[in-house]
Image: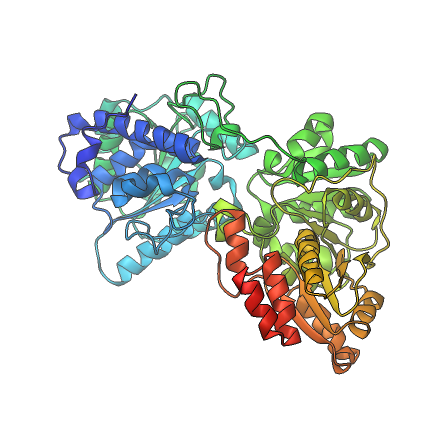
Length: 639
């Protein structure tokens, strides 16, 4: 049955929304929720968070004069309804597809997106910066940061609140409390928020009107009043936030649009200065069509049938790298009680949910706290444990100082399992693991590995657990493996030694990681041109296999180095070694292939590899260009 949205059809931009009568907002929210569900059924994507903030999104754009008033969504998984209401409805079914809408807020996409947010816990810092800039310019616009209860658990959020509470800049922080991040929220803060809700009933409309009166200061508007309220004892609410200098309002039902409009209107018009925190309770995935919902699984969904809720899934050809890692870790932990697994709010994404079901006492989800995760692991390592930190490559960037200062300098044997290394398809540049080779290979005494397939991943996991005198890391991609046979148990590899996969003569292809299979395809094509190629799997980005590099350089006319990482990584280290050893003076023509010097937007993996020029055809073109074979290059181009 075709979706009917007669009121939503009239709302192209928020100024038209603000012209509605308040009595129409409930209908608009219901139609907007239906639109999000219908669009997600056709495109998939991050879906649950947006459904939970439909009423809040309508109320925010109704009360605030966007885009002059700034709304920052953190994390902007929540922003699908916002995109629909801000002139992008006609493209919402292109979301996360090449050339379509980005899955998160993006400054270059719309004036209604004042800040790009695809990693969590940045909104309060960014909002405070905008508020201070407004005050410096003597402007009068409002700044609103919408942050989830998972994102507010991260240390950066508290750094920002600590700063905001000491300033006198007007800032509204809305805590979207649905007891979830991607997985259920964990840690003491989640229990604290639950206690606030249990001890304080939802504000009624009368409460809102009496506690938050238009043109009056908010309750506890100065430090003296806050101190008195704190001393008054258990009836006082919002203690933590008020002690940080925020005026606390709530909790409020995030699906009661009349209450939301009223409280936002009162806060907007209040004469109170300084930051305010509005605590809003929502249900992630509200209105979803699934019969047996799994809150973690409908965070992001595939296309699905609107009638049945069944998701469209292709039959897997091989187990995913994530699943192979999890199963391999379980196998090793069965034999070694010192193995401890740590993740930062991504148990299912890293496979540690599987490990955790088998070894709950040895699994730690520390919440959105990558910095803490790394130093926590360092502490475990000092006491003889074998910590393995499973964090996406792009999220490990958030803990780089801890990797350097707390792990590398002390040579502690912390093992890093970096899922989602390389390009990641529809999640785009913010989630691509592009930089880990560059930022880890520069660290002294760090072992860095990249498996060519899922069997190699099992071997590298065992290898990392055997390294007890320094840190190590292994990077592996998102998605399915190559379908190779898996060993019953991984075997320890010799540190810093690669392998020859195919013997040739004039051409040498040195691959790091899963580009190996594209190098083999390129070697097949080169053979058609009478250019048999040697294909080597480096296995280790650090330490380098000096003997293998020398052999490839001295016995081939062209050496092409292939990696799925940014410039400054594996290829750069190989070139530096060759220059130091005089191997560049032998006449071998060396070319490096890596990710380009620009951010690659969202799209299918195939589209991204083509844009990055990392396809088998690109390898062939690179070889022929090095050989100076214009005729063959024209032939390749014609094909």
